[in-house]
Length: 156
Image 1: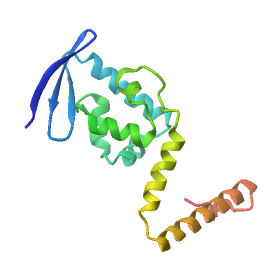
Image 2: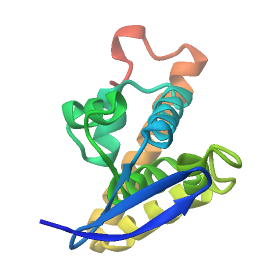
Image 3: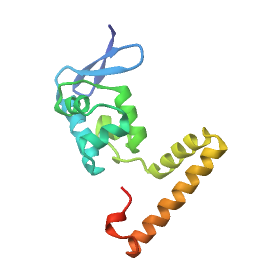
Image 4: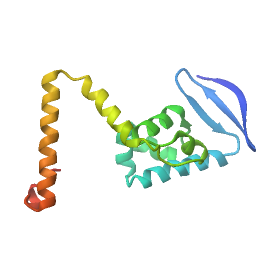
């Protein structure tokens, strides 16, 4: 299945990294470090004000899989860590060690970059359609704030 990478020393802990073809699983030989990372996963989700279901949609995981990570019954791997960091602008250093700020300072820049990358993959007619949809959404939000959009007609 995977091969064991030589043990790495983390202050007070030995961690065995199980290397698979495309990611690493952190297997703590004491569980304190893993529990701390799980708690930071929960803290990030709660700081974003998201349910597990909504949080998982953003990183393309099933809710049951992610719930197992939060409970500690499923190992944490680099792929999931990277997804959380890139999707939600979380600092990888914070997520893995608890040091530094929870969120990267350039979250808005990251989101704009992701949006531009996706947008640039579209053909011109689709780009025009997206721009028109965004304009309509902005207009609807303005009307809603002004109170000119009836409550029953709010966009869902």
